[in-house]
Image 1 (cartoon, rainbow, N blue to C red):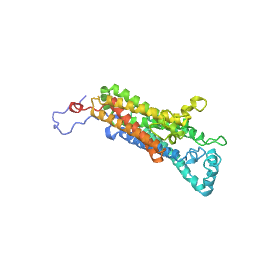
Image 2 (cartoon, rainbow, N blue to C red):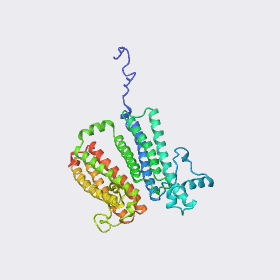
Image 3 (cartoon, rainbow, N blue to C red):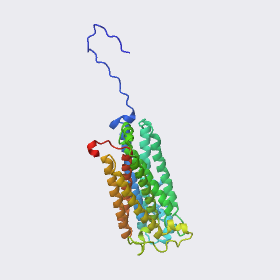
Length: 383
């Protein structure tokens, strides 16, 4: 209730105090936590992309088994002198990969593959540290918007799980006397699949934090359900293709049957079921695994065209353009896949093919997001 003013009080002698505006952290705009958390997540996104690239190069250089122990803390320090290097080399000599494939290596050769694997693991530690420091900072300063604590914790939990799965994968190849010289393809697929799952969560959160909560609530009323549903299906199909690609990589199937569109001059590869029991061929037979990867790629391309046509029916220009980018990326990825086969999975082509998968997933996520939260456009733009 306002106080009574004296009749002798000079009007305007004291400006009335404005009531403080109640602005929550989530609506603080560019100066609030949403922007800070978004930048932090974008850094994590970039680091995960680099991690996927380094992981792919570690595989292509056959470096993944050079470190035979899992030391999450002390392993951050590389060998510091000649004695330490010799000790690591002797450990490597105890496993089948050295005995059956790399017994020609000198210490200098070993150092090359060691640095690839050490760099891969070190990057994982950096990602974990960036997440932990960022989350602790926002949490302690109470800058995490309502409803976002669980989402940010999920990223950290998946990152920790990824580290454990990484060693679970490496352990499958660190054997002695079993004739195993590579990691299990199933575990490699799990490792890569989880990396893309983490990337998808981070990407979705970055998109959400790019707009205010009020804007998202209003945009959701204009959700284009069919485009959203079909882009979700395309995302799932792409994820399956990534897993199939990991199986191809895990057994070096990309370096066999290097003709296209046929395989060894025929539609279906020869000796597709020579492994017993028969079900193992779907995961371990190079010809059959590559055939499945190719076939799923064709289906993915066809469905991408169907999704693109549906996306062109959007009432929003930005959404239509997002689906244009998706179709272009999927087509380019298919071309890269063919080139990878024709070049016997040349390192530069193969790693480009893997990184292109990141772009495909990111663009599908964006089209899916704009279908769920369309950007309002004028009638003229819509027309």
